[in-house]
Length: 485
Image (tube, rainbow, N blue to C red; front, top):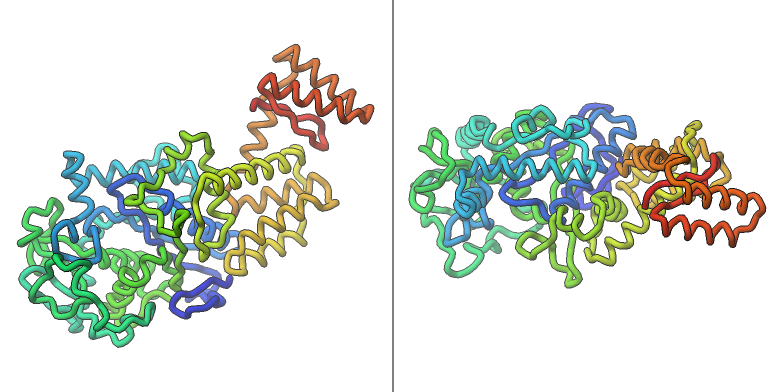
């Protein structure tokens, strides 16, 4: 498979460390609020990548972290609201403990993932009864369950001379990594001390770009709600260290793919890469893969602070969660998506049109159309060219091949698309049976006669009468399929 490698700054052929196997780490949610659509775009992208790798025959070992401690409100460590732990801040706002905030929002993440048909990191469907209590069994890793591993990684960096200690924190010294800014090309002296003039910094911090590995429970953080003992005193981990610790604990000191949003590149992933080199003596990640933003009409990144909608709010407007999935899968992960209700309407109509075409194929499955299967694999191989894959599907559905073979092939493709095509067909075909509504039965019989007589105007008029009764009718090779609108 070819993907765009941020480190190489070009599309490269993925050469896994172990032939036929892909190890992958996904930067996951920070669980202090309900995910917004900008978050969701990334998780749909990486779900498609995971499914595509499986479809192409790889074994996949995948991990997704859950940040439930140590994620600051900015890239600065000290200041007014800057540097406040998001978990602590939300806990104070809701009047409950940070761990309860985390548990509450992990469950909403699972709800959204289920609705979007996103598979768990271990490759399985997410059970309806899965909650925060057992997420580790399905491939998620919670930061609070890896504190000891984080401390051990910091100790390794300390022993190798990459850290220094102040009264307030343990820092990573970025000057010890010659290519620290390999992602951005930015010079260290271009780093600003703070994001604004009144942001305070640790007076003993050596370089503006140095970052916290362990924050002590002193000064600004004297009353921090989540704390653990460590060799440097009671405190809590910095944000970046969790990914290095969890990724290497499960995937080893060398793994293939690390994903995240483009906003992770200049700080979070630059710092994570530096930590890996500091702790293990070499880069840990072979390929860094990043998705572009979901933006508004002003080309601004959609985020919680911008008031973006959550999935439940979108559903309340009459959309299916799979409309969102269709929108996000139809655009390459490296391309910005300008989000609007018009764009979502387009995705909704396209998904509905695809469902109708598939339903028209009937219920009987034939054999896979190998020509199209190979072409589909080529599109996946080509940097996840999902727009090309969708165009190929449309071409296949219009082909002269049998309905049975086309149905088998599109359902096979749905292993990657994740649009629940098989379930939709099954539900629709079983929704109405003859004998439940006399008026409807009469209209259906008249329509069959009209089509047999090739009176298509009358058949279309009868279709409209059927729709007025609250039903829809789809013509298939096996006859009419009727379901409720």
